[in-house]
Image 1 (cartoon, rainbow, N blue to C red):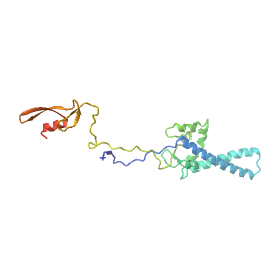
Image 2 (image 1 turned 90 degrees about the vertical axis):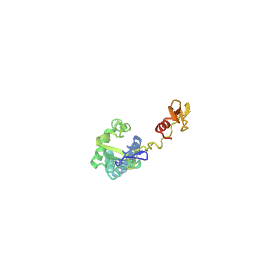
Image 3 (image 1 turned 180 degrees about the horizontal axis):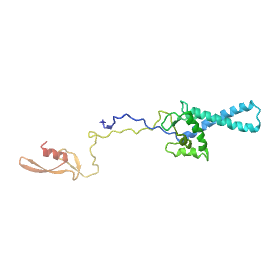
Image 4 (image 1 turned 45 degrees about the horizontal axis):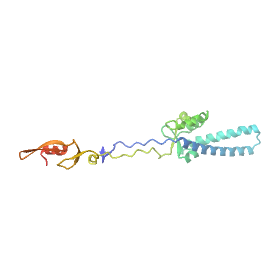
Length: 224
């Protein structure tokens, strides 16, 4: 239907697509998350080492093991939670979803975490492709079938509808700069050559006149 010059539809409005999290927003969240994980892991490893007499080789093994375990639990649990985001992602207003925009399971979140190892090697290439893929996906997103999007309520801004001109709103034509001649009946100006040569007969006398099209049609129909 058309009302007031705006084209509307009887179909319900569909929800616009979400904004995908950009490269630098994801980098910022990644930095915050790994800073937190490193601090927690180092603190936990320090307590474990202090409470046990470990030789150097055992310590070299314990620290990476604690780091990986802490990171796995942190990312997998939080990204599959109702938050759908780690603390870093929460700070940057982004979250992880599946390809349909729904919350991911713990299994998918776990697969996403371990797929990050492929994104890191070689030279973080799997992470850098985020800047160039259509949906801003990293390699581990493709593998796990996930997306990183802006928080709910942030969508692509639709273009503002503009009124479609109706006959009542169409402005009269502008002939600025043209050579003009005036219709003697309506007294409006028109470019030279736009007036029509019309023969008007009154009291048996035929008079040639140059009239605009509207006035010529009215004269032909006998209207004043």
